[in-house]
Structures are given as C-alpha cells and as structure tokens.
Image (cartoon, rainbow over all chains, first blue to last red; front, side):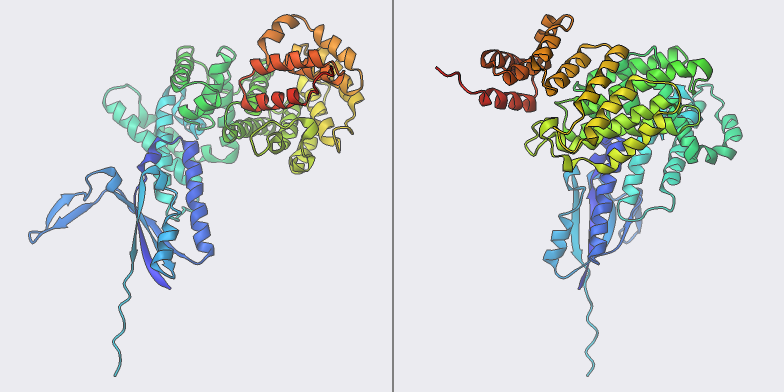
Length: 118
Length: 402
C-alpha cells in the first residue's frame, strides 16, 4: 500500500447550482467517499478555507492569497491509500467535480526508507 | 429553509433570504464534500444562513434602510433555535405554501413560486419542469413576489372558515403539481419524478399538521401514492409509454401501494367525499387487480359515474367511455365519446380524443375509421413516446382485404 494526496482545485461551477442541485451534488461526493471507505482507500479529507497568505523570499514578504483565479484555489484534500499510482489515478477519475471545471492533482507521498542496519 | 428564514426575517426579505440560502448551501458543499460532516448538518446550515442574513441586514441598516435589526434580534436571538424544531419547520413550510398558493395569484405563478421558495429549484429547473424558458419563469417569479409585497399578503396559516377555502386551493394546487410531473410527456424523467415527490412531500406535511389535516388531504395523498407506485412501469427502456394494459405489474411499488391504502382508510373519516376520494378509489381498484383483465370494471364504472356527478369534465367522460369498452360495450363507448359536449372542438384540439376513438373503432374492426382517427391523433401530439405508440397501433391494423 502506498499513500497518496489528492489536491482538489476549482469545481466552482457549482455556485450556479440551486440548493436542490447542490444537495444532489453533495450526495455524489458522499457516495464516492463511502465507496472509497468501503475499499479501505479513504484515509482522511479536509476542506481548506479560501483565504490565505503567502510568505516569500528572504525578506519574508507576506502577500494575500496565492491565487490568481478561483479555479486555481485548492478547495481541500484527501489522503488516499492505493496499491499503485495507476490505481490512485483511476480513483481520482471518480471525482464528482470534474464536470464542474474541477481538477484533482494526484501526488504520491514519498516513503523515506529506514537506514539499513549493518 | 427559505420558509424558516422567511418566518424569522419577514416575507418582504424573500429575495435576501433566497440569496442567503444559496450561499449557505454553497458553503456547506465546499466544506462537507471532503468527508467531514458536522454533528448537526441542518443546524450548521441554518446557523450559517442566519449569520449571513444578519450580516447583510446590518450592512443595509448602516446604509440607512431604516430597519431596526439589532432590536429585532435581541428579542428573537434567544429563541431562534426554536424555529428549527421539526414541528416549527413544517409550520414555516405550511405558511410558505399558503402564501405562495394565494388564491389571488395565478396558478402558473403559484407553481413557479412554490418550486423556487419551498423546493429549492433553480430558475432553469423550473423552466425545464414547466416546459417554458428561463425568462418566462423569472417574469412569473418577479410578478408573484411583487404581488406578495404590494398586497401585503400575510405569512400565516389561515384560521377558521378561511382555512377551509384556502385548503381547497392548496389541494388543487398539489393535485396540479403532481399531474405536472406525472403527465408531462416532454420533460425528462428525473425532473418529473422530482415534481411528483415534491407534491407528495408537501401533501404529507399538510396532513400531518394538526389544523391542516383533512380527509380530503388524505385522499389526495393516497391517490398520489397509487399513481406514483406505477411510475417505473409507465415507460419502457426506450422511454416509450407503456399502457396500463401492458404494464408489468411486478414493477409496481408495493410499499407505496400499501401506504396508499393506509391513507385512503384515513380519508374515510368524516362525511366528506371529494373528487380525490373517488379518483383515489379508482386508482386503488387498478392497484388491487392482479392483471388488467382482473380489474373490477363494474366497480370502476360506478366510481366514474360518481366522479362525473361531482366533477363533470370531458376527460372524465372519456375515461368512463374506455371503461364501458372494457365491459364489452364498445359501440356505447363510441357513442359516449361522440356525445361529449363540443367533441368536434376537442377532437381538433387534443390528440387523446382521436386516439381513444381510433382505438375503439379498431376493436370494432372498423379499420377505415380506426386508421383515420389514429392518424389524426398522430398529427396532433408532439410527444415522441405517444407518436411511437400510435404508429405501432396504426401498423397493427390489418390491411383491408381486397
């Protein structure tokens, strides 16, 4: 088993949804998560608040927000367990936000090997 | 939710409330979708909505709108939680129903307003459900809201005699809403189901309320249950209409049918016999029959006779004629259809009359007249499913022997 991080961006097209449609869309997310949980693939997931600051450079310059456009904003993340990178990518294809201009960045969490004892 | 907030903020803030609900749902979606639900999602949502609404109202107050918000909230903030008890939510929704289904509003405006404020449909969804375009719906909503504002319609459940009258209007409205979903041949299936489900949900709130409950309400809901139970079997995988005769009765939802019987029993309390009682009884007869030929047509005919007395209409007469035919009196059925008042006009206006006549002539093996009427019906309907069905019938008529 390998650990992966799913980084969710965009999906802001949902703002044009009616409350009724949003509820249905939320159901899709819950169904997806339930499916992943049943397979033992979903470890954790959290939303990020939209506001943020960026600290940069040797002067530690602080600027508001890393984002240019709303579709670039990271909305939240999953921690996922999968056998392979391919499997993780397959899982990401089930993201309900894809039709809403959303994207999933799939990153493998690097395993740092323990030093070999000699 | 719109209903509850409207009760807190007042009917004149309906637009504000709608915006706030929209934003709150968006926030909930963005927060919850990664798998973390709060302990009490509904309470959370209401809290967010309430805070947003207060923010906006405070801002407006600063701009000098003249509403004394702080005062309003000092008195109400303490017991605001009470508005979110289940009973109170139903109560708010009922107030909303009575407001939206005000007798002075046009029926088409009523439907649009209910779907928007109580059911949370978007303008696009409403337009799709009612087979019209977005701007028409926007106009209707605007007109309805303006009317509520200018006429100072109260956000309340009427009492006493007024309740009886207004309840009747609400029943009619729910009946229409259900039919809109059940019979609209053009709207897509999902939307149609939503409309039916919404009509049933609202009707249930009505009969569960201590004051608004009535035998007629029970009868109406039982009728909806019987019809809804057959929803799945009415269309085949090609989206073509399946007639009652050919429907796979195993697909009927037994649970819904049983619930329907239960409500129908409740509706028998009291002296009152409404149109819905009879229509429900007819639907129940169909649900009871194991097969089409097992249907107790004698009983159905009696019910239609009764219905005709209570609510004379060409549709009822037409349905009654079909029952006559099932009892073997095909010629009398044809005579009955032709005797409907203004039948010439009806035949030109709606395909169903020609379709039924064609069908009846087909049974009499009058192939010329059967073909003539079925083709006329074919030309009158725009529904693909209906057209397919008619075409199938026309083709099944054996060519005349030379």
